[in-house]
Image 1 (spheres, rainbow, N blue to C red):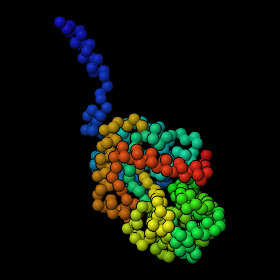
Image 2 (cartoon, rainbow, N blue to C red):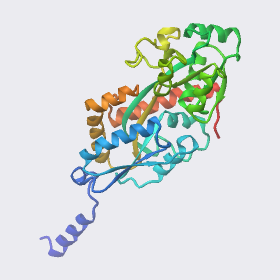
Image 3 (cartoon, rainbow, N blue to C red):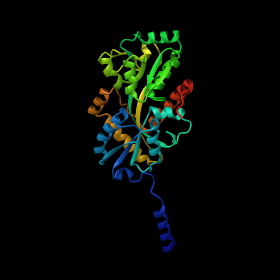
Image 4 (cartoon, rainbow, N blue to C red):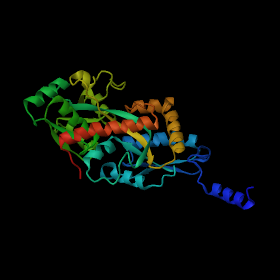
Amino acid sequence: MISRRHLLLSAAALCAVPALPGTGLADTWPSRVVKVIVPYPPGGSTDITARLVGEKIAPLLGQPVVIDNRPGAGGNTGMEAAARSAPDGYTFAVATTAHAINMTLFTNLAYNILDNFEPVALLTENPLMLVVPASSPFKSVKDLIAAAKAQPGGINFATSGVGQSTHLAAELFASMAGIKMTHVPYKGSAPAIADVIAGHVQLIFDTTQSALPHVKDGRLRALGVTSAERIPLAPDVPTIAEAGLPGYEATAWNGLVAPKGTPAPVVQRMNADVVKVLALPDVKARFAELGAICPPSTPASFRTYIEDQITKWGKVVKESGARAD
């Protein structure tokens, strides 16, 4: 016969066993404010994306969503802070193309975008636009490639900074076209595109959001977009692939991640709510105005996406010789 003492000890042991991950969590989370770290200053495309999604997802979560801007070090400052945060489901971060690039660009990162984070959901993909001054002799992608082949290193291109998507998109273009161009880095997109408009630099790969207004007012000429398909905002602008460089594609993306160890039910719930928000007509329309698309994703598919981006841009970084340490 089992003794009463044995029963009590067994019951105590069962009570001491931690609850299985996620047991009841989907019903109780979140119970307080959810923070999203944006590793860039307010007002940029990543910040705009985070705030729009945060505003729309808050009612679904039943809690406020606070955006915490932590700019610095090419997006690394904010990601380091996010990696150190408790994996309790109350801190998330927005990762970008730069964080996939930084895996190769920096030799001593204090975080690993895959090892230290749980991918949650892809938020947006933004094609870049290859633009030249309105007075440029280059009327097409083929014109540009021909000129660059005739004078190796003689064509210069502006970027928003070393290792940014605007830089690596140009390096990928040069690599695939078999040409050499000279990199002229700036501290941000605004001064870079201003010098292209003024004719001080011959071209730039910039976000559609930044470049298109200047194309429409006649100060810049668009030679192509970096996406696989033409974009609704500029249907007359060909893709770079169809304009003379088959197979070329480069996009700037934003995605939601959580500190490693964040409970799977939280990640799954946040993913489901993000997908719902991105499918809202007004959200899709707003992002379309910014030249962005919002493809649905799962945590698993987003992890694969990040892995592919690290491989793709790592090759470009190595071939270009770019370093940011």
